[in-house]
Image (cartoon, rainbow, N blue to C red):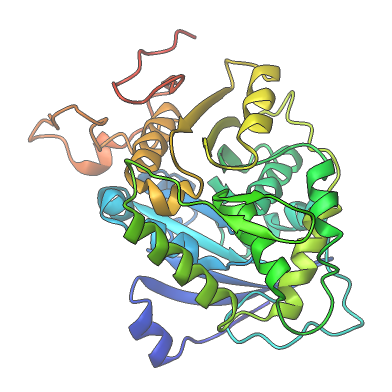
Length: 368
């Protein structure tokens, strides 16, 4: 394990990234970690100092890296949460910007192995516990981390997470994308866009067709800009050889059994996501005392298209874990005694809040 300095260029581009680390794990190799915000550290052995700031551990989806999570955290809807939190962004092996090809001798970890190894990141940074925030394949990885280390993750926020093995549709589409060569082919790019945005319909056996779907949450021009930015990143500083290895790991994933999971779970999905029906089915099969769900209409990539709704749900979920209690729930005016400091106000209150089926209004308290 060693500390890696950040370049002046990268610091100017991502001013909220405080530090960059490279953490060596037993089975997954080196993992690049970007820390956004200040990690609360124990003062002279007092681990309670960590209770004053919420720590999130994030893992990105296919075809992206930590920058997607940084963009979400930097959205205006997340400003107050960001001030009171620290985000530990994980780059899946080989997904840091301008990464060289992973060597032929390197065996890319399965989603299970990667999830189990994430605990090394928390240990390296001396973080006692965190809230997991993952998208797509990254959500699957974090869920496996929560199952393997339930005492270290207070909760799991899983965006467009599918628990089942690679579906027939996945296998069908992968026939047209052998994931070989150094570059991303058009069919491979279309597969990744379908996976992330869900704004693509499979019309014939040979090509994808992008649908112009109207959305109240995202104007057509903004949606096109989001897609163009994703394509640019996919063909820009990310190593396509390494992207394909992450895709293979996702396609070859094994079933994720969340029943009996100890950390509380917030499932978030866009109704345009190709996995929305799978996630709804997964929710129905889980203990409603431990899991809640947010379904966003007319959206696929909810982090980019509807950050305000995700931030609202994230805040309510964390407050249900006794975190970020100094922030008022959405629609509630802040009322705090002048004699009470922000640190005192942030003491856990062990409440749990229900977010299902809608977060349009502040949900009722759940009785324990």
